[in-house]
Structures are given as C-alpha cells and as structure tokens.
Length: 125
Image (cartoon, rainbow, N blue to C red; front, side, top):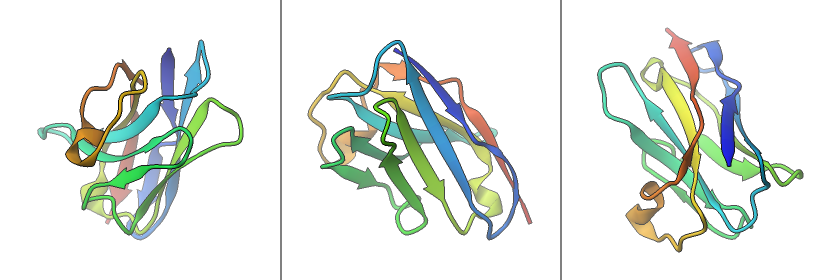
C-alpha cells in the first residue's frame, strides 16, 4: 500500500484546511488510518485515527474539538479537517495505515505499517 498525504499549505491563524490521505495499490477495508504531525525540532505527534468502517475514531487532546477525521465515499481516501488553526499547528502532517490490528486507547497511535510522505502545513500569525 502506498499512501499520499496532500492538502497542506499556508493558512492564517483561525483558518481551516482539509488534508487528504489517498491509498494506491489497494483500497482501505479493515485498516486503521491515522494522522500524525512533526514540527521542526520536535518528535512526531499522533493526532487522530479511525477504523476504515467509521465505527471507531480516536482523537488526542491536541486534535479534539478542532480536527475531524473522516473517510471519503471512495474506498481509498481519509480526510483530516482542521479548523481554528494556530501557529503551533505548523508541521509536516503524515498519514499512516496498519494492516487491521485491533486498537484501543493510546494504542491508536502505535503500530502503523504504511506511511505517506507528508504534507506541510504552515499557519501564520
């Protein structure tokens, strides 16, 4: 599975962006798909994840209330809607997918098998 994250760009503080994670080579079926970000000089941070069925979603405190993870109608795209963006949200955003492991709690942020190349989000003040 190859993943491609897209939709990043420059946005003013308070604005919104929607990132897309598109899979090629196969469609999502039993996979969990997650979004992560890495700011300059910082460790990679887990944000949100969902089971492809849409039955389970998980948000970290950093994402809760402002970010929404969702799936598209086509079986190969997952989105991250980001609202009320802040300068501290500036980072490279990555999507990742696993092979369908059962995930609970903090486990949603672990054990991903496939990673996209990242898309840069810059939030200006």
